[in-house]
Amino acid sequence: MLQPNGGLLALISTPVWANLVDMRSSSSWNPGSWKTRSAAQQPDWPDAFALERSLKVLSGLPPLVFAGEARSLSASIAEVAAGRAFLLQAGDCAESFNDFTADSIRDKLRVILQMAAILTYGAGVPVVKVGRIAGQFAKPRSAPTEIVDGQEIPSFRGHLVNDDAPTLEARLPDPTRLLDAYNQSASTLNLLRAFAKGGFADLSQVHTWNREFVAQSPGGQRYETLASEIERALRFMRACGVDLAASALREVDFWTSHEALILGFEEAMTRRDSLTGDWYDTSAHLLWVGERTRDIDGAHLEFLSGISNPVAAKIGPTASPAEVVELCDKLDPDRVPGRLVLIARMGAGKVAGRLPALIDSVRSAGHPVAWTCDPMHGNTFVGSGGRKTRHLDHIMGEIGEFFDACRREGTWPGGVHIELTGDDVTECLGGTEEVFEDQLELRYTTTCDPRLNGGQSLDLAFQVAELLRR
Image 1 (cartoon, rainbow, N blue to C red):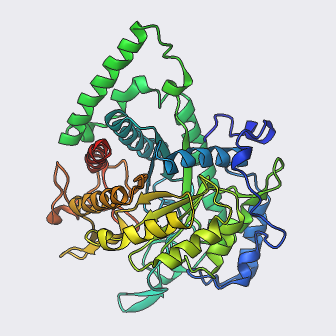
Image 2 (cartoon, rainbow, N blue to C red):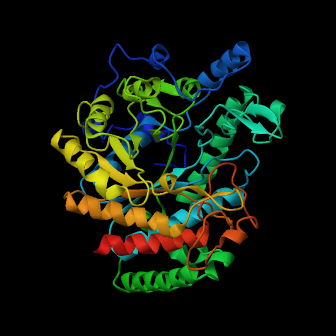
Image 3 (cartoon, rainbow, N blue to C red):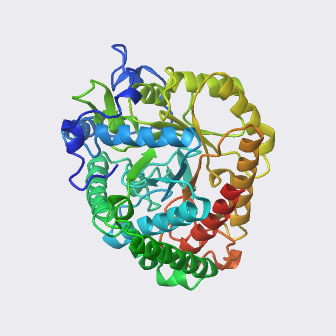
């Protein structure tokens, strides 16, 4: 939870979530234990001494988030797992060093707040808001190199590692970027805390969250109608004597997350909590492991198994029930509600045949996980013009299949994991204000994968709210 004072109170207050805290961090685990395992998707750093210097500096810097905040998020995710809340995890595919402004941070938060308002008001469930922000700087790649203009160069791995410019010099991994990523994350968190607790997220400002280009879209106009309904409800509450100055209406809890990919960086950001003695990765509130790095004996699961943050794992269409149960046993052996989120990313048309068996096996093993859906990564394709893209119809198709599968299995469809931006981009196809394939080149600005724009994000939120009401 983003505190306006940086969360320092979490370090000195009573651990009210003590019942959710376990002692996973045994004496056999330490933040560097992952080095004894095979680590996929790690950069080939050309200068080991420069890397060591950067990691040493990083390990001495203040934490970005605090243990008490992570415990609060665990409590909220436990509500998701119990079917009493919905998890909205959303943000950039890969944050950029080149697009770092107060406006861009505000606009990402703005569209997430709009989506949360639609889901809460339309479906009547609390929404746990987690951003892919303030640390989502690294991306796994299908190959370590690529051919550009006849020259083989390293693949772009996110601005945490190298630059996206297609030259050999730009693509060399640079460990000073680890410190740049820390500094940008710190600045982003400061601004997010100010927005979340300083008035921007006040529900009475619900109309002001609609950006001009979104407001002109059919989804934006539908949102304006909903905002007017919320405004009337607030006036009614005020007339009934309800105190609208309460923090629940004026502030939001907003947490951060990213894929724990570059393990040296995550190790350097791991600290022992002075209240509980447990280890926490202080680079984000929630960390996840991807489909390419969830090897049960690999370094990434070894690292995540020892930190006490809530953690998540992406589950693709090839995962077997036995593999997923083994993963749960590794990451949550004590079966603690709020500890583990499983993010299904199957692809449209594949969910019904694969997800039910996974849900049944995890439930039978007694793991109280929160199930959510990433409908983005299984639905990426290359358009006729050579651009990677996604179609909103396919994205919504997978979400609908996810809801159906969960309900058939008697499990709460706990959330969605979305790549989006607050900018007026043309990267994904479809939407009520439809983006066509010949329009992709107009505003295609992502450094990696295609993102929903603001209007498409609202379209998705309205459709998900309808699914939740059924």
